[in-house]
Length: 120
Image (cartoon, rainbow, N blue to C red; front, side, top):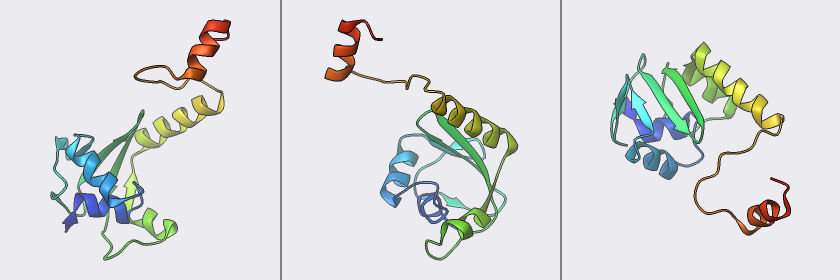
């Protein structure tokens, strides 16, 4: 068993452990359908949902590692669900087609200039 923030980092689903803890605190990590805190223990067989931006990944925990491992080894720590894989591929295809990226907050100066010139 391992803390969920540490597991996300060792499985290379997030770049840093701090980002993993922040995601858990922000309600973007669910274990077996329930939102969790960073200190929640995960064990093999648990279903873990992680939302990063517009993409939600659902993985089944298979194992844990004592320390961070290579990307190839990290993929052996979990199995991604077929539905999650299909959604990630769809998101990647939308990005490659140049679909507009969903922005939040104030437009940037560049966005405003494009809008003013009629290129939106």
